[in-house]
Length: 147
Image (cartoon, rainbow, N blue to C red; front, side, top):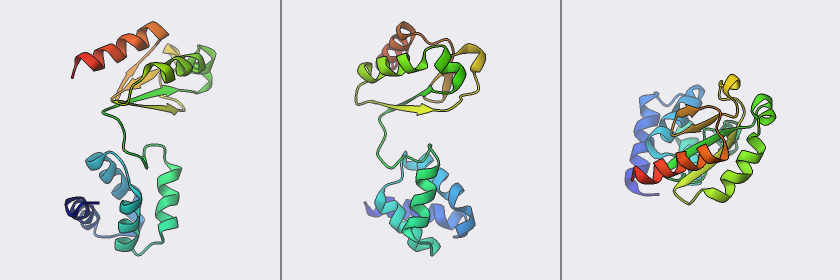
C-alpha cells in the first residue's frame, strides 16, 4: 500500500473521529474513495480503531458492497432474487460470465428493487429492467463505446 493510500485511510478514519462503532461508514468511505478494501487497509483500519483484524474483516465480508479485490472499471450487478430467477436471471448470469472482460466486475446481488421488470441488472449504479441476453450485450457494448 502506498503512503498516499495510508494517508487517505487515516484521513477517513479521522473524519469519523476514530470511532469503532462507525466502522461501516468508514468502510463505505474507503470503498467510495478507492473502490475496494485491501488486506493492508483492513490491517490499518483495525490498528487505528483498536479492533482486531478479524472484527474488521468480518464486517467487510458480511456486506456485499465491500470488495476485497480491486474491481474493474465498470460494476455490473445481476439480481438473483426469486422474481428475477423466475424470469431468467440465472441464464443471464451464465451468459454474462462468458461475455464480460477484465474492465467489468460482475456481481450477483439479491434484489435491486425492480421485481416488476425482471430480470434486473445494475450497471455502474443505474438499474435496467427486462434485460435479455441481447440487451445485456448492448449494455456491454455501450460501456466499451464510452471509453
